[in-house]
Length: 608
Image (cartoon, rainbow, N blue to C red; front, side):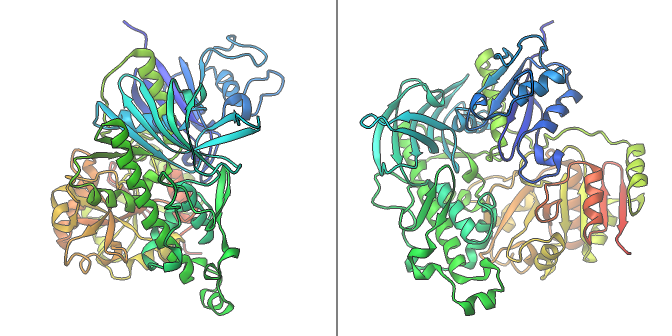
């Protein structure tokens, strides 16, 4: 009997996470924030500890980040280990005697200098394709330290966009990169060769002192009043804006390649977020009267809304150019997309329309944020060391740790809860009655969803037919007024309600799709101001208990859709445990927690 091979991939930076493989199969994958309860948390220490629930020994711990462990990781006192090697050693996950005094540990594999390749690996290995070309676009990937040939000046070149040829078992050949630096090297096209980013051979590169597609999006997100990493808010605000002639060219159309932002419009801050150049143009600035009307909320200023509109429409057009460039350079019409921009549901739907006659097949990775590089690192290392060519295409995102709550565990959680909670038997029909009586009901079941989308295992549910539902739930969740909500629909009914632009289903909620004529009036709570909705199709095979609940809702209302949003409050991570769920209810006006696996309804009273 062959020995099992355990490989854990960890992503160190923001949106950090852990992915554990057993013989190439994903055992669990989770973001650190779900365990630590700190949004976007870095340093996946709690995730590493969680590995002990599944195995006491690892064969390999594979590290993902943007800079190597030697350059950036903190050290353990006295022993000199980096903190990740040190923690794994102290937990007994790796050999305690394999290294001493900061020496390299043979079970630690540092892939931190190939950030975009790890995004590509996560997308490629989960796609249905046996070979593909990957397009990666994010804020800033790995850094390549090089010396400028003429002056000898040290430059730090950061990945913005990459095009990578992918094939089994582990071939990832870079064809193109847009690289950014702090120095004035505007639009230099060159051929790069060397060991950086895990490369062999040469590839086309564009080196600029500007930001890329995602950097410009981050700049506008900051301009609208949020942190650069909160770009999803900008995506929600964009349809409130208008086409503004002052904002027509956020990207430099004179550049010989897509995605270079205009230096007059933006101020780069490589590798961190960029800024809108507000001081250069009067149309970026608000008058005192406008500020009085907005009451300090940037999102209510029309110029902010117009910039959100401009960056959404123009960034997706630049990505479209890169998709076509990827196909042209590779000769491959199977395209996988990852990196932070891959989470842009509006852009993902736009590509379907623009590419419909070009024979291009798209796969958009649902874990496109940096947490996905933990999965990419683990999968790449497995396929490289085993020569495994098995295509394990994505079939589920319910990959969180398995908590296996028993009836006694649930009762214990309720009894230990510091508040007024009761538990009783309930059926789907009871939950539907609560929803149609305008109650918010949360649902908790099984393993949590990997990634930022709630897909019915950690969701807040509501009746989508109420006209004021969006405003009501946004208020309860403590979210901004303009942010839209998603819907979960029975897969067999989706085409009657929404235009999927040729797709059979959208089970991972990666597209904001147009509703069919007459639908908006039926489910106004989940239709955005532009007539779209981020939709999750649900089949009985994918999620039987959630499917059954939606079917019961259809039986009563004639509507095969429930209003679905993530089970959290504004600024909090999604809940992971029942204890997290009870805490969320205690700190909100939400009263009901449904546990369909156990047929139980927990009611939390928030009365003083």
